[in-house]
Length: 150
Image (tube, rainbow, N blue to C red):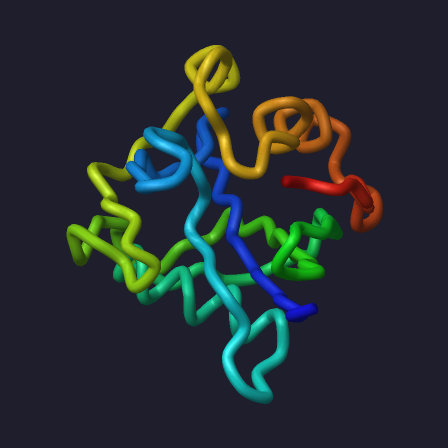
């Protein structure tokens, strides 16, 4: 079984979360934060920072680990590390129309808690709990789940 490590960056500004609107051939239209897979010997912090720059053209500063999620699929045992940043250098934009995984990126939006409601969000726990955890100040990294996915 393959081991996969992914990192993402959650940016909250003025009560809104920065999210991509993507269209994946397997899962359809969805919202997700910027992020991707660990490469080589880089740290999870370096991965999150690199992926954010690659996907938005801006730099996320002062990354703070807030979520750890683990799950397995038929193909992989996966861990995802989500970081919070409230400090950006540059203006996030969509630099390319399609990423290396074949996911078509349509736009980058700042969404409120109400605007996220009812949308397909990957990973789902972001829509379910991010704004509550954010209001509570993330006292320590939160282990989200160890579930099996198909």
